[in-house]
Length: 293
Image 1 (cartoon, helix red, strand yellow):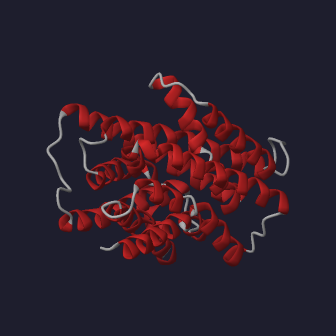
Image 2: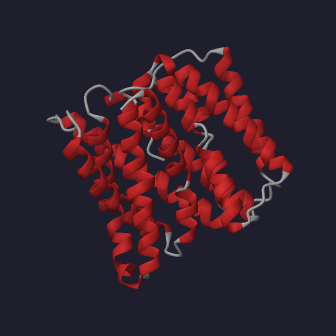
């Protein structure tokens, strides 16, 4: 894979990640079934990729299994809350609310890893906060937009915790192996909730869920990991900052979710914050392997 091919693969991966909310809305099944199916299909896709990838599987110690189990539980919560946000408030608000995770990461890294929060990181948090204020049409807790945004913020918080969990084990566990194991945990966590209704899932819903698991999870993650062999982590992170752009654009085309000028301004601030966060993370590339959203 050369530089040009790797850059193209990154954009395709970002597009697939951006389509997550779109496929989630197209599927009429409950968030529990969507997440279970996504994880199950992702395990299959990642297993295929691991079969071709070098050093994709390493022996694990007890502490590795504990971290993967915790990561899987956090990933399950992240996905369920995100798809609830999609169902309640639409793709645009859910995607932008989730995109707040860099701000949570800055704060949590300072608290959990005793790292000093720099002035430019404070600017990042402020940008995200202002962006979220602009994205929200009103702050009535009874409104669907506000309720959906709160679910999306919870999704961002859980993803931030997942990123920090993966950071603690980075360098020990190959990214594809970690993703495969965590998706397996997600499927097991959601199986009790999803099992009673699996027989009622329509063929069309299985199609959307399958596309979600294979392309938006397995293929997207595999393209991301493979491209890092050629592309700098800083460049990869900036490309993946386009994920909300792709998601909102597709929701605009498919569902006629026309964003208001205020929402576009808020989204621009949040995406700018993601780019800044990507620059700050350039000195810590392993943390980027947590991208599974």
